[in-house]
Length: 118
Image 1 (cartoon, rainbow, N blue to C red):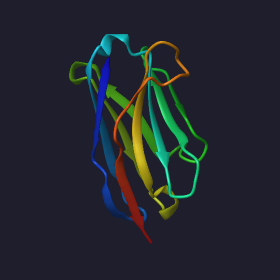
Image 2: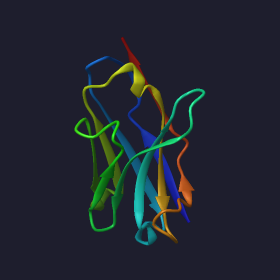
Image 3: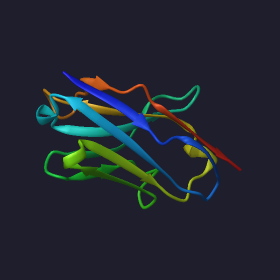
């Protein structure tokens, strides 16, 4: 099993930056893909960014050029660097791990809230 714990959320003004962290524990060697999702009130959950075991990354169009996903293998931690934040980025951000199948996320964190004020 894999356990995930997010941190780094908070309140930031529009135009500001935040870095989210997702610390993984347990059977981390079994993780194929790590993803950051977000969910705003009344909106469906959105896949924001992913990073594979080999380091390949993908981004949602809404965050391309502003967000960067990265990882520190030694720390079993994945990061989401967010810049040029807008109020539309306000959401609960969750990290997830795909173990059995790359597109199917088996483990989820509790989330960390990001609020962007205008």
